[in-house]
Image 1 (cartoon, helix red, strand yellow):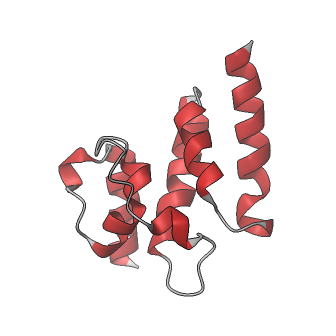
Image 2 (cartoon, rainbow, N blue to C red):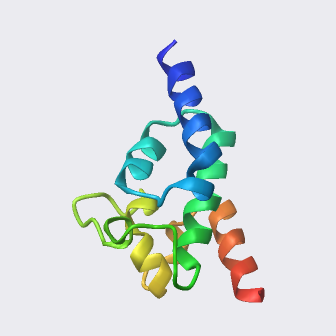
Amino acid sequence: MAAERADDAARDFYGFVTDVLPIGPEALDLRDRTPSTQLRDLSDQILVEEALRGEPTMIMDEVLADHPDKPMERWWWHLGRIRSGDYPEQLLPAHVRQVLAEADRA
């Protein structure tokens, strides 16, 4: 039941986030709590694409700031390091590496 509510909240949030709101720290917390693989992959794509986008970006500065209190394996807390190329690529899941590869080709 709680997992379904989290999925519903994630679906609602990610359904409008890139059209209406800047992506804030709540998106990172929501990514932590999203049990659905499909929704996590969607949120990952949105987070990485927006982090790599030039100015203006839909990501708030607080999201791009590094969060040293978060483990490196939770890469979404280190989007600024991903953006600058300082994040160890081997720690990224394959679908995120794919988004980065596509951005390099663009």
